[in-house]
Length: 209
Image 1 (cartoon, rainbow, N blue to C red):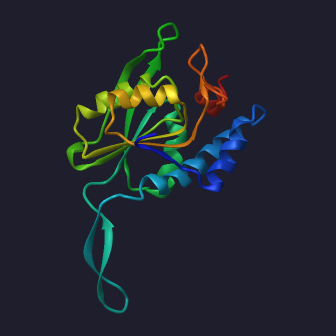
Image 2 (tube, rainbow, N blue to C red; image 1 turned 90 degrees about the vertical axis):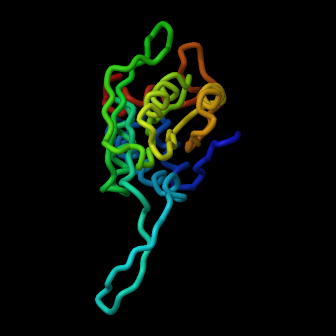
Image 3 (tube, rainbow, N blue to C red; image 1 turned 120 degrees about the horizontal axis):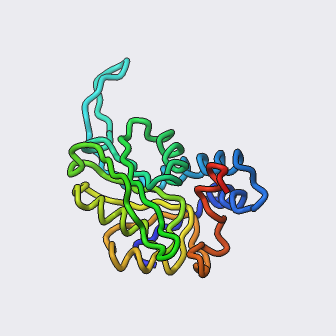
Protein backbone atom coordinates (compact mmCIF):
# COMPACT_ATOMS: atom_id res chain seq x y z
CA UNK A 1 0.00 0.00 0.00
CA UNK A 2 1.20 3.50 -0.80
CA UNK A 3 2.55 5.61 2.05
CA UNK A 4 2.27 2.75 4.58
CA UNK A 5 5.44 1.71 6.41
CA UNK A 6 5.27 -1.73 8.02
CA UNK A 7 7.64 -1.96 10.99
CA UNK A 8 8.51 -5.64 10.76
CA UNK A 9 11.50 -5.75 13.11
CA UNK A 10 11.49 -9.13 14.94
CA UNK A 11 11.28 -7.52 18.39
CA UNK A 12 8.29 -5.42 17.32
CA UNK A 13 6.47 -8.45 15.92
CA UNK A 14 7.31 -10.57 18.97
CA UNK A 15 5.94 -8.01 21.43
CA UNK A 16 2.83 -7.39 19.32
CA UNK A 17 2.03 -11.10 19.34
CA UNK A 18 2.30 -11.19 23.14
CA UNK A 19 0.00 -8.16 23.39
CA UNK A 20 -2.64 -9.77 21.19
CA UNK A 21 -3.19 -12.66 23.62
CA UNK A 22 -6.51 -12.25 25.43
CA UNK A 23 -4.99 -13.53 28.69
CA UNK A 24 -2.30 -10.79 28.76
CA UNK A 25 -2.69 -8.86 32.02
CA UNK A 26 -3.15 -5.09 32.15
CA UNK A 27 0.36 -4.74 33.57
CA UNK A 28 1.98 -6.83 30.83
CA UNK A 29 -0.08 -5.14 28.09
CA UNK A 30 1.02 -1.73 29.35
CA UNK A 31 4.67 -2.77 29.59
CA UNK A 32 4.70 -4.34 26.13
CA UNK A 33 3.03 -1.31 24.55
CA UNK A 34 5.64 0.93 26.14
CA UNK A 35 8.50 -1.24 24.86
CA UNK A 36 6.99 -1.60 21.40
CA UNK A 37 6.46 2.16 21.10
CA UNK A 38 10.10 2.76 21.98
CA UNK A 39 11.19 0.43 19.18
CA UNK A 40 8.81 2.07 16.69
CA UNK A 41 10.12 5.52 17.62
CA UNK A 42 13.47 4.64 16.03
CA UNK A 43 11.75 3.74 12.77
CA UNK A 44 9.44 6.76 12.54
CA UNK A 45 12.25 9.24 13.29
CA UNK A 46 14.72 7.63 10.85
CA UNK A 47 14.35 10.32 8.16
CA UNK A 48 14.19 13.41 10.36
CA UNK A 49 16.08 16.38 8.86
CA UNK A 50 19.53 17.04 10.34
CA UNK A 51 21.89 19.98 10.55
CA UNK A 52 25.58 20.23 11.44
CA UNK A 53 26.77 22.25 14.41
CA UNK A 54 30.21 22.93 15.83
CA UNK A 55 30.97 21.41 19.23
CA UNK A 56 34.01 20.96 21.43
CA UNK A 57 34.93 17.47 22.63
CA UNK A 58 37.39 16.96 25.50
CA UNK A 59 40.11 16.81 22.81
CA UNK A 60 39.24 19.32 20.08
CA UNK A 61 36.59 21.20 18.15
CA UNK A 62 34.59 19.21 15.62
CA UNK A 63 31.22 19.18 13.90
CA UNK A 64 28.31 16.87 14.64
CA UNK A 65 24.76 16.36 13.44
CA UNK A 66 21.67 17.31 15.42
CA UNK A 67 17.96 17.24 14.58
CA UNK A 68 17.06 20.31 12.53
CA UNK A 69 14.43 22.83 13.56
CA UNK A 70 12.18 23.21 16.59
CA UNK A 71 11.67 20.24 18.88
CA UNK A 72 9.58 17.35 17.61
CA UNK A 73 5.94 17.12 18.74
CA UNK A 74 4.25 13.86 19.66
CA UNK A 75 0.49 14.33 19.27
CA UNK A 76 -1.44 11.87 21.42
CA UNK A 77 -5.02 10.98 20.51
CA UNK A 78 -6.61 10.59 23.95
CA UNK A 79 -6.93 8.35 25.75
CA UNK A 80 -5.20 5.28 24.33
CA UNK A 81 -2.48 7.33 22.63
CA UNK A 82 -0.93 7.84 26.06
CA UNK A 83 0.35 4.26 25.99
CA UNK A 84 2.46 4.91 22.88
CA UNK A 85 3.44 8.39 24.01
CA UNK A 86 5.37 7.20 27.08
CA UNK A 87 7.48 4.76 25.08
CA UNK A 88 8.36 7.34 22.44
CA UNK A 89 9.31 9.95 25.03
CA UNK A 90 11.84 7.44 26.39
CA UNK A 91 13.71 7.83 23.08
CA UNK A 92 13.07 11.55 22.52
CA UNK A 93 12.68 12.96 26.05
CA UNK A 94 12.99 16.55 24.86
CA UNK A 95 10.01 16.32 22.50
CA UNK A 96 6.99 18.54 23.02
CA UNK A 97 3.57 16.91 23.47
CA UNK A 98 0.20 17.84 22.02
CA UNK A 99 -3.16 16.27 22.86
CA UNK A 100 -6.30 15.73 20.83
CA UNK A 101 -9.31 14.46 22.77
CA UNK A 102 -11.72 12.43 20.64
CA UNK A 103 -14.41 9.93 21.46
CA UNK A 104 -16.24 7.65 19.08
CA UNK A 105 -20.02 7.95 18.90
CA UNK A 106 -21.16 4.36 19.55
CA UNK A 107 -23.99 4.57 17.00
CA UNK A 108 -22.42 6.42 14.09
CA UNK A 109 -18.74 5.59 14.87
CA UNK A 110 -17.87 9.20 13.99
CA UNK A 111 -15.20 11.02 16.01
CA UNK A 112 -16.27 13.89 18.27
CA UNK A 113 -13.63 16.32 19.57
CA UNK A 114 -13.61 17.47 23.20
CA UNK A 115 -10.02 18.71 23.66
CA UNK A 116 -7.22 20.21 21.56
CA UNK A 117 -3.92 21.61 22.86
CA UNK A 118 -0.68 22.01 20.88
CA UNK A 119 2.72 23.62 21.53
CA UNK A 120 3.44 27.02 20.01
CA UNK A 121 5.11 27.62 16.64
CA UNK A 122 3.82 24.40 15.09
CA UNK A 123 4.78 25.65 11.61
CA UNK A 124 8.43 25.00 12.57
CA UNK A 125 7.80 21.57 14.10
CA UNK A 126 7.42 17.99 12.83
CA UNK A 127 4.35 16.26 14.28
CA UNK A 128 4.01 12.53 14.95
CA UNK A 129 0.43 11.51 15.75
CA UNK A 130 0.15 8.42 17.98
CA UNK A 131 -2.81 6.10 18.56
CA UNK A 132 -2.68 2.31 19.05
CA UNK A 133 -5.38 1.57 16.47
CA UNK A 134 -6.31 2.94 13.06
CA UNK A 135 -9.61 1.09 12.65
CA UNK A 136 -12.46 2.89 10.85
CA UNK A 137 -10.09 5.79 10.33
CA UNK A 138 -12.66 8.30 11.61
CA UNK A 139 -10.62 9.39 14.64
CA UNK A 140 -7.36 9.51 12.66
CA UNK A 141 -8.93 11.63 9.91
CA UNK A 142 -10.53 14.00 12.43
CA UNK A 143 -7.27 14.34 14.38
CA UNK A 144 -5.19 15.14 11.29
CA UNK A 145 -7.87 17.50 9.96
CA UNK A 146 -7.60 19.48 13.17
CA UNK A 147 -3.81 19.25 13.33
CA UNK A 148 -3.44 20.65 9.81
CA UNK A 149 -5.20 23.82 10.98
CA UNK A 150 -2.06 24.74 12.98
CA UNK A 151 0.18 23.95 9.97
CA UNK A 152 3.01 21.75 11.33
CA UNK A 153 6.10 21.36 9.14
CA UNK A 154 5.26 17.69 8.58
CA UNK A 155 2.89 15.00 9.90
CA UNK A 156 3.32 11.26 10.39
CA UNK A 157 0.83 8.81 11.91
CA UNK A 158 1.93 5.90 14.13
CA UNK A 159 -0.27 2.98 15.22
CA UNK A 160 0.21 -0.61 16.34
CA UNK A 161 -2.53 -2.04 14.18
CA UNK A 162 -4.58 -1.02 11.19
CA UNK A 163 -6.64 -2.66 8.44
CA UNK A 164 -7.31 -2.08 4.72
CA UNK A 165 -10.60 -0.23 5.33
CA UNK A 166 -9.03 2.19 7.78
CA UNK A 167 -6.04 2.88 5.54
CA UNK A 168 -8.27 3.51 2.52
CA UNK A 169 -10.41 5.97 4.46
CA UNK A 170 -7.43 7.74 6.02
CA UNK A 171 -5.47 8.14 2.79
CA UNK A 172 -8.58 9.19 0.85
CA UNK A 173 -8.55 12.25 3.12
CA UNK A 174 -4.83 12.57 3.89
CA UNK A 175 -2.80 10.98 1.10
CA UNK A 176 0.20 13.08 2.13
CA UNK A 177 0.49 11.62 5.65
CA UNK A 178 2.56 8.41 5.95
CA UNK A 179 1.31 5.68 8.31
CA UNK A 180 3.76 3.63 10.37
CA UNK A 181 2.29 0.42 11.77
CA UNK A 182 3.36 -2.94 13.15
CA UNK A 183 0.59 -4.86 11.34
CA UNK A 184 -2.14 -4.53 8.71
CA UNK A 185 -4.83 -6.92 9.92
CA UNK A 186 -7.58 -8.65 7.94
CA UNK A 187 -10.70 -6.46 8.27
CA UNK A 188 -13.15 -4.56 10.47
CA UNK A 189 -16.10 -6.31 12.10
CA UNK A 190 -19.62 -4.87 12.32
CA UNK A 191 -18.73 -2.97 15.50
CA UNK A 192 -15.72 -1.24 13.95
CA UNK A 193 -13.12 -3.43 15.67
CA UNK A 194 -9.99 -4.65 13.89
CA UNK A 195 -9.94 -8.45 13.32
CA UNK A 196 -8.01 -10.40 14.57
CA UNK A 197 -6.77 -7.28 16.36
CA UNK A 198 -6.23 -7.17 20.11
CA UNK A 199 -9.55 -5.85 21.42
CA UNK A 200 -10.02 -2.31 22.72
CA UNK A 201 -6.52 -0.93 23.30
CA UNK A 202 -7.71 1.77 25.74
CA UNK A 203 -9.61 -0.70 27.90
CA UNK A 204 -6.72 -3.15 27.96
CA UNK A 205 -4.19 -0.40 28.69
CA UNK A 206 -6.13 1.16 31.57
CA UNK A 207 -7.90 -1.95 32.87
CA UNK A 208 -11.39 -0.61 32.17
CA UNK A 209 -12.80 -3.49 30.16
